[in-house]
Length: 231
Image (cartoon, rainbow, N blue to C red; front, side, top):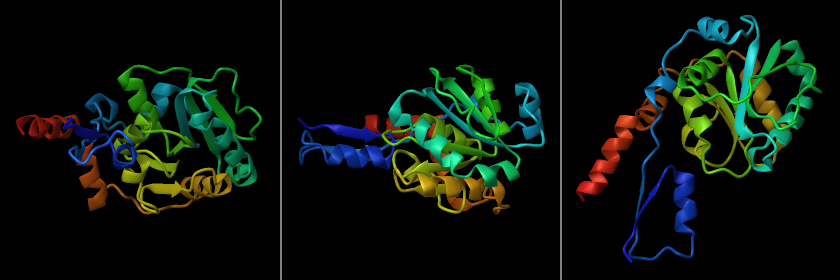
């Protein structure tokens, strides 16, 4: 059967092409999933933190997923990575901000401030979460996304992630974050410290980043699908 496969990122595309159900008569394309404008509006960091009741003078690391007890999402790996860098992060005046269903998982054993907001559903609050933060971390070890990486990227937030999913397309090493080999928790922790503590150059005018952000809009997603339908 002739099939048009449409992948949401290149990582998924490679997974599809390696599948036993794929035939020589199949076609492949990549269509990035657009982010709603209400999730990536510009809000000043101070206003976002004021809305969420967060301190102004802290450096904020953001992590969130639907279910912290889902081992694929890597909450335990993040906990270990932060623990291994506790002394350095404490000196950097860091706060860990999380959202989602914690399900009794806790970061309270860390010697840094931790604020958990529970499940967040509305677009404005999610937008504020990204804009209030300095770094988004994605410790997922088995993931075709996640969507939070795309949303963080569209809010000009630095990202540290393992080398899978959409992060492979969006995170340019030492520009807007870092990609780390999967399960290398020590390196993951080092990259968290590097991105939260050092004064890295601003990447908002980087041409590669701007071009990638254009591909992650709802308008681009619709236009790409329309081209496929017209064919």
